[in-house]
Image 1: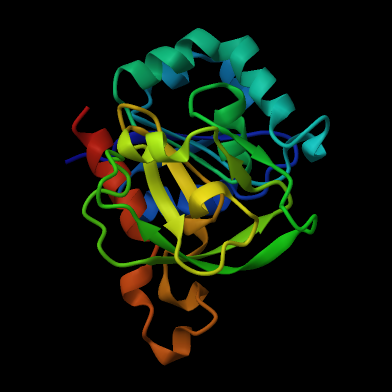
Image 2 (image 1 turned 60 degrees about the horizontal axis):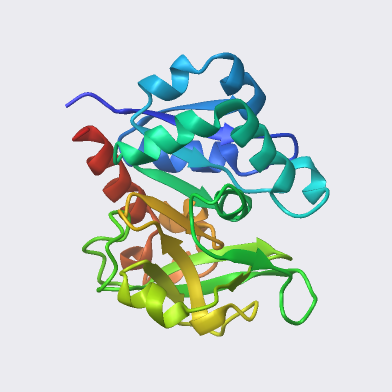
Length: 239
C-alpha cells in the first residue's frame, strides 16, 4: 500500500507544522507542509490530498483572536474546497491553533475561549478517548493518551455538551485535571460524520517514547499519541 498524500497547513506564526508532519510520516502518510496562502494559489494540492492537518502554534501572533486570521485565509481562498474535502469523508485534524481555526470556519461545533484562570498553560495532560464517539481518529483506542498542552485560549465552550456527546461528537475528555475550564472536560470534538477532529492538546508531541518526561521509566508506551494518527492515515488510505 502506497503512503497516502497528506497536507499540513501552516501559517505565519505556527510552530508545530514539522511536529505534525513527523507524526503523520511515522503513521505511514506522505506529508507536505504548505502555507495557507500558497495552498490557495495551488488548490490542486488539496484536491490530490487524502488527509489534511492544520498545525498548532500562534498563527499571525493570535492577532484579533486565536486562529481568526488563518481561518480567514482558508475560508476566503479555499472555503468551498475545504467543505467539499470534508464532505467526501477524507480525514482532517486541527490541533491547538488548528482546532481554533476549525471552529472559526464552522467545520467543527463550539468555540474556544480564554483559559478560565486567565493564564497560559504549558503542561502534560492525560486524555480519555470516548468509546461512544463516532470519531475515526480515536476509533479503537482503549488506553488514555498522554500529551502536552500549550495554550492561552483553550477553554472549549458549547451550549449543549450533553447533546454533543449523545451525537457521538465528543471525542476526547481530560482525565487529568481540566487545565482550562473546558465545558464537561471536553478536550476534543469531531464533526457529525466523524472524519474531522479538533483538539487542544498536542498528540503530535508524543509519538516516540523519548518525548515523554518519564520515558526512562518505560511505562507510557501504551499512551502514545501515534495511534491517533495511524487511525487517520489508515482511513485516508481507504479513500
